[in-house]
Image 1: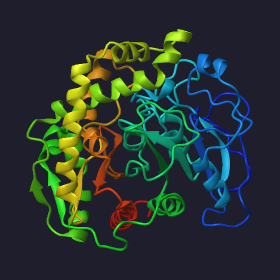
Image 2: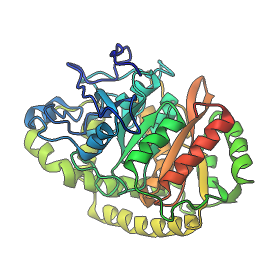
Image 3: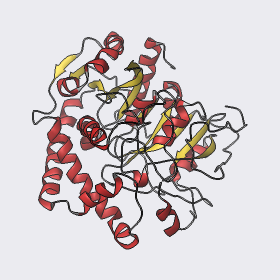
Image 4: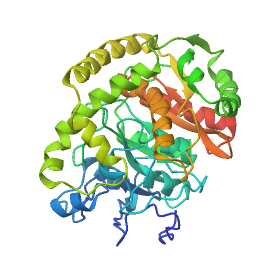
Length: 401
């Protein structure tokens, strides 16, 4: 990546002056340009969190988030702050205040949210990698929709100090890259060593619920990637993850996360009465009125599901399934159509979200003329091994290793 700022033809960056900062002269990320979602603090710059009232009621950042500082110290060159869905509470990528980024891989479709700008910046080649955050799918889904590599790490593996929160017991940082190799290089800077270090991954498991949930075209588009993955790890073993159904996973995740969202941001929403774009106010109102019994049931189910998944994956097993059941919704989709896709999708993203698992999305195919991703999921603390597997699979597929 050269030192000349490429024009932002897809609207990935926050409007206004571009927040730039040169990193160390040497390091594992030297020569790589990156961007950060505008919920990470950068000293001397506002953190807008995608909403003008948030920017108006919060001071300019006095310090840089440690995760961003680590990237700069490793030689990365910061190219700017990218757009986010307001308060990171949405999956389409729409932002009426800053403008919705164009999906470079499918311009007639949404880019996915809430890390929409970071995904678009990588997909358009404006940066080599970009930081996002993932609570309910906000890295994984834009990665799938925009045709990039993306990772949601194990929950708690990387500090979110200096970043705006939504649901702290679900929130993770995450990043996008144009190649599996760069995705892995960033992980080498940010992630702790695996536990146990160097242990191989396998066997390969094919969970029935997300594959039944997928639209036929998406499933067909991912067939070649599954064949290549089986060439690396052996024949996939069928397994059931959720006899309760993906709908139950979505509902439990939704309720538990909504309670946290209101606990985290409700005081500010109530005091400020901010202007919100379509869907965001409704989500916060649903969070405000969440039945405590439903939230408690969600938290209780989460403990059970987490124990179930960690036992299943403890020996090194890897899950493989569609990141999203469908390609990105078209920009013309109604709010009802968007909500339907959201529910179908979050039943799948809740698997790793509820259990705190690392998940890597690989741009493995196209359906309806748009990208779709294949996800690899492993036990907590196996992030580096999962990234190494993603590199091997990308090499096998000939896609940006």
